[in-house]
Image (tube, rainbow, N blue to C red; front, side):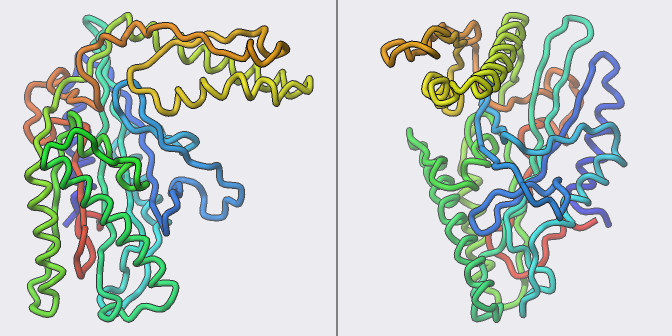
Length: 355
């Protein structure tokens, strides 16, 4: 029987087939967190010079990964092939409890962009499948030194995730997403306007009583999180503003290349430092214009002028509940922002990730 992810892919394309009044564009990425490092699973295994992956948040509150391979998707067969290809590169290890124990956390995300053919309005969202590696006793797994290092990294990230889940459940004003790679990647899947489903596989054996209890307690905390799923709609003004920002970013990349060719790379780097920091951490969005004289001028000229973004007054942020707009009959998959399969602590393979 197909697992959770293949069945969700089938359901997604079934919904899209009935959306005659909308243009739908899909793309995806797949990454894993292995021993505290973010790795792109859609890159060929023998790739030597892997680009550094950087986690960022876009203006809609959606997590994005700079330099990640973003695969365009055309149909169900194509999507399933991409998923299985990436899954084949995941880090697994044979232990006394599992022949193919996951040694990394895996995130497979499908980005969904929808345009209404009648009024031109756009919505966007993300459907993410997240498989958490299990937190298992090293005595039970019989792991070696390398396996212990993997386990320590897994436990550290699960602990950070547990803290975030507790804070969200308690309604804390400040959530420490940035303390760990896992929580940063899952920020748009847990908080804001995300719709999150958690699936826990439990062992019926008394031998695994502690792992089962921990998993169920983890799930209970997730159930207490209260979010407010909303539409993520993009107006014409926002579309124009986004195009302006992309054009400016392209212009900046051209400036970098030109400055490097003329020996001005260091000075330009100082000028752009503020822009890149703001671009990485921005929450409200801004349009930036460079003071080009500063590239060759003194330090007092090295500044960036900031203008209010036309979309700063937008209503609501986040990865969005796009399907309320694109189709009225989507009760089975009503939010592209979050179907998740999680495995905080368990003793067997996760069925949702097997075909």
